[in-house]
Length: 302
Image 1 (cartoon, rainbow, N blue to C red):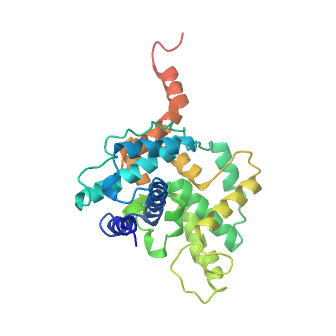
Image 2: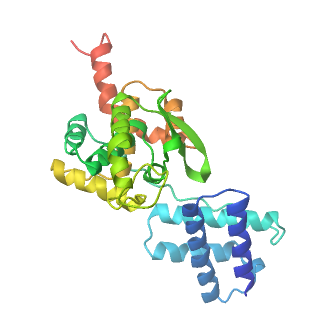
Image 3: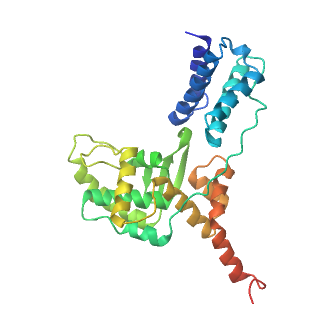
């Protein structure tokens, strides 16, 4: 086992145990390290202490030669900076060669969102007399009503729903929990599904699961299953726009901000660690702000 493999293993354990990182985060850190170690092998670098700023510059040149996106390069630099910060903490190295490497500024894409007319078409496509139609309606209602991620939606269990105060308990990234309220439309859809459709789906399987969302065989629905459900809804609604689950999350945030919700409140509802992640949604409300200005400012129009 090479030195690099040992460092890799120790760092991954640190991420999982001390940082409580999600499997998704660990996967990408691991991939970024493996890519870097392969480069070191090609450059005949055998010791971690041989890595200096010259080696870092050569590596960055190779990344840019591969025409990777700014986002991908930034992620790799960030991963390696964290890795060497860990090595420095454990006294494996005396300095962090990635410390002063500037991250390329990524062009933040403006999140796409759905207009109310498009949403209304989606809400009308499900056959609420069938178990799967009831289930699909709940998925749609929750994704839009709460802005949760697909992974968070898939993990919901019956005990996570509190009808008495109209909230769901969501387990997000890094196993961080947050409560999110839901409204009367979502409440009605959930209640109908739990009392009727879900009971019928449970009879298809011997699996007495607590997961809310079940497939046609009565087993827990997967992340991929939820994406397919939404894809079929879009096809039924004959929408020409591309709709993915995250677009419903974008729509939730955009509509909340358009209606005057506080940015900090939306940050908490979305489970964003940094406010900058939430601020990206303010860009898509400029048309709305212009309308408010034109209708409110005394000198905005003749």
